[in-house]
Image (cartoon, rainbow, N blue to C red):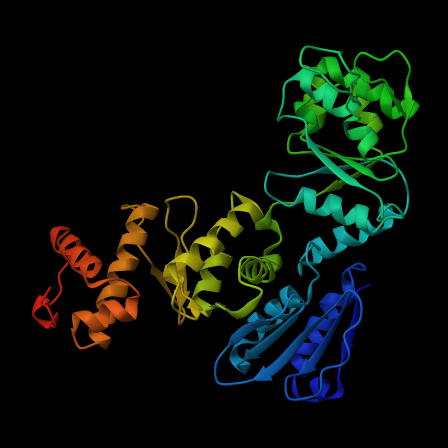
Length: 427
């Protein structure tokens, strides 16, 4: 389990958040250690692979990065669920799986158990669910953690090139081979080789891969002698492999060789408790190493929870990066900043009433969303500056000329605003 330290002050003043966050951390496999402490108390000395989260009860929610592994979290009692999710994200080590859903925690526990063995692992799941993250976790939890982890996408290159990339080649083996190459199998010697999208591997190459797995040796292209290798194999697939076998696109003997220990990674829609900590983790991943991180409002979190996530975790990352752009200049990501990859808009709950953010019959493109957000920011700035154009431009960080251009665009687009309020050069 992940080692968790709670200071006495945290146990006293932050019991609900700290205890639930600790429970979630302790269900996670070993990924380092985390200390939860009160921001007003002395911070314990930092240990290796340890992250620290400084908790404060306040009148607003706020998340600040104090460095690579130290974060400050202020929260209000009414947003304790989000505070727990943010604590889980903040306390997780870089690159480690982030989850809170019971199904995900059970899957990680299973992955840690198999990590200590040397058997092949087959990770199946839809695109964008985090299969490579799980593969890296298995490697890091294994006795091979100090050795190389090499990943190759079997669908990313033609058969002749893939063979040379996997098994290596000797000088002159083919046109352009001016020097020998060791290949990924030998590069991963002693460590782990991830074969991503294994179902996309050409059938002709599957037999050579099977031999490499059985004999634990490879024959470089153009060579006559095999080279022994010591590699742990993890394969990933987003297709139904028994169907691929039945239809002749995947060799049955290779499938059974790889399917020694299967792990299924479900879509994000089936593990809803993972959404909030993953959303905060995406904000932390794409924020500067020091400074304030936008907080996710309750309405925005409800909108995230109501989405079906056809693109899974990869779509969630897109959505959160987009929200950070749209919310730039503010400290809170609101519901209107949550724009999904699909153009279909979905309802969210505000005070128990379902409110459609935009009519489903009139989808909005991202370009329109950005334009409208920019226009609203200009109008808000004009209002704050009492219509003074020079002050407005300064507040927005643009020139007066750019402001005039934007206001002219807004008029042409039929956006209504009181142009008589734009003074100081008159827009």
